[in-house]
Amino acid sequence: MVRAGEPLLSVRDLAVGYGPTEALRGVSLELAAGSVIAVLGANGAGKSTLLRAIAGALRPRAGTIILAGREIQGREPHRIAALGVAHVPEGREPFSDLTVRENLLLGAYLRRGRAAVREDLALVERYFPILAERARLPAGRLSGGEQQMLAIARGLMARPRLLLLDEPSLGLAPRLIDQIYEIIDRIHREQGVGIVVVEQSAARALAIARYGYVLEGGRIARASDAAALRDDPRLAALYFGTMPSPRPLGVGGVVDSRNRETE
Image 1 (cartoon, rainbow, N blue to C red):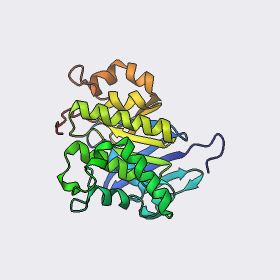
Image 2 (cartoon, rainbow, N blue to C red):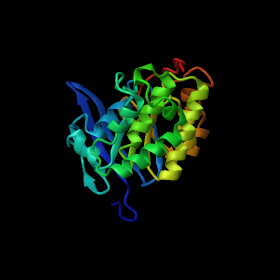
Image 3 (cartoon, helix red, strand yellow):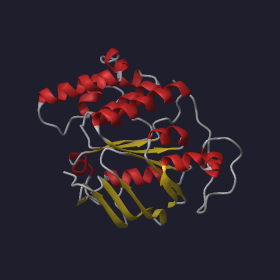
Image 4 (cartoon, rainbow, N blue to C red):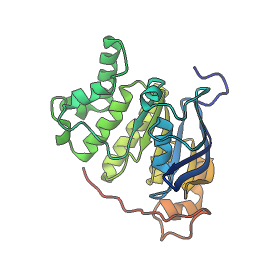
């Protein structure tokens, strides 16, 4: 239970590495309960590493990760999931040979109470009607956009209080990106789920976020409310594709704005 004035998630001076390579250095951020924050940055900036560390897939070298007042860094992923953290990784990763419905039910594997699971299954199928239509279809036969919807819906089946979304727009056509972000915003507003969304598509992420962080070279280069980041002309040039990328914001890194478009 989050006490009054206490953030749902607090990351303090986090350091994470792969062998001799340091991917994150001194990263700190906070997420209020029921809020949305955007983490922006180029490929290789450390965005996915940050989410993997929060979810327990990577063990930090230093720093703390606090969920609702409880330190969780270094715990096993299934124990962090049981505390209410759902991680939707980049790449969607459905169980291709299982049906859409079976994939959704796997999202609730840590839960007890069949009636509540059935209620949440009906809920996610209201958010994503196409998944109800495709319920008996093998997940591997879904389009890219449908697989992204399935990945988010499967995360929601855990009934999380914290949802970690890694590049939900990656590889999708603009109309599908708009549709998915409309649903993410609706989930936040209707369910009160705290959301950390990692994105290169900065404009869409900042449109639903209250606060944003810019990662460069494994460090926080900028942290501000979302409106200020949207209005920053240098960020617009770097992340919104309005002009060729100028020099980095202060730590290093080059933005790759290319985005495959598939449906």
